Length: 79
Image (cartoon, one colour):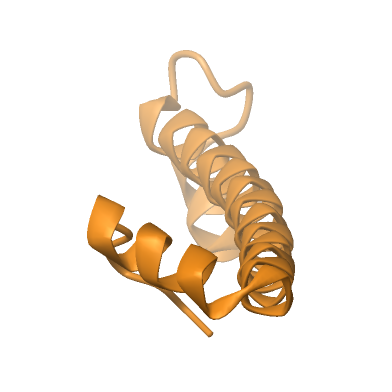
């Protein structure tokens, strides 16, 4: 049960429905929160990997024959 907007009227409605409705709502929110935390963790990890890849690509692009230690023809064969 994903609740997009939980205004005061919604909370009062659940309260008036009884303790079981409140418990169900809290449990639903806890499950949704755990799923969102997992998504954030996964996205953070993926973002770090992508940033590392970008750094490696930028490093390769910034090399030229004067600073790479290899002649241009051997660098071309690596791509």
